[in-house]
Length: 69
Image 1 (cartoon, rainbow, N blue to C red):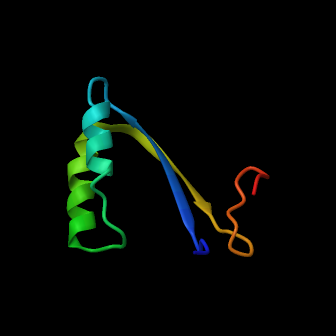
Image 2: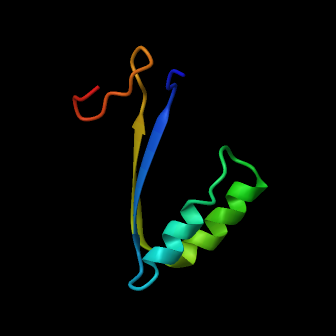
């Protein structure tokens, strides 16, 4: 299977909430649908600060991150 798109987000959990945040992220669904919106609503109280996002678009089906393929 060739990769067509990648996405990475870095979030900082409030102290003592990291495990809860990780558990919720593992239940995430693909796409923008009501379940994804509900997940974001649950995540908001667990996160502090601004998340950082990075799009990763592969060239020729191979993901190139930081010069590595």
